Length: 115
Length: 115
Image 1 (cartoon, chains in turn green, red):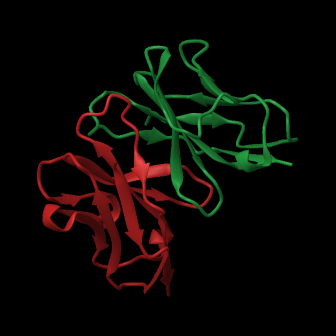
Image 2 (tube, rainbow over the protein chains, first blue to last red):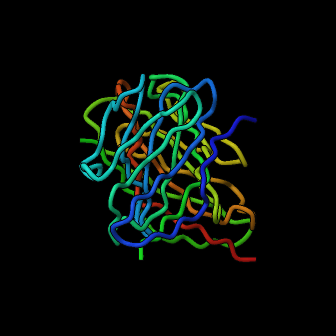
């Protein structure tokens, strides 16, 4: 069964450093998402991406964040200068259709620890 | 704006007992509703979804949920809990028409199953 993959599974970085989280969505999917889950809190939407541009972004997704689909398979989230409060689990998801009834498939997540 | 409220951050049941996880939503337009499960150190897996067809929805692993518009609820149930059901459960809403297609999650309910 096709699945969304994410690398690395755990990333430790120092405050102020740049990090890139990588995702490989399901191959025939066209809509891509990043969510994050701070420990003990709910899963929060960060950004959606379609046709090589951002469809929607949350207020969390400020100028420190960027997304990119550098080739036909990868989808990346970059945090330019990490803060302590960026420590969280980051989930990538993809979806086949713009129809909101379609399932989003989630990757296993990348745990980001900022020290 | 849409929102989801899950009543009870922790629910504990005995093996073989009824599982009831509560979810209420707020939406100004007809929503799509989802239940996801998260096992430790794994991503989110879809249990079931409501997409405006039958109000009683059956999902994987014996779970089902009923959409009640008058109560704005979408509670998740399972007649008989198994030890393997221990996990975190998330209720989420998506709009009927939402170009970005983001999911808005509830706070999550951790289900414990006692032998």
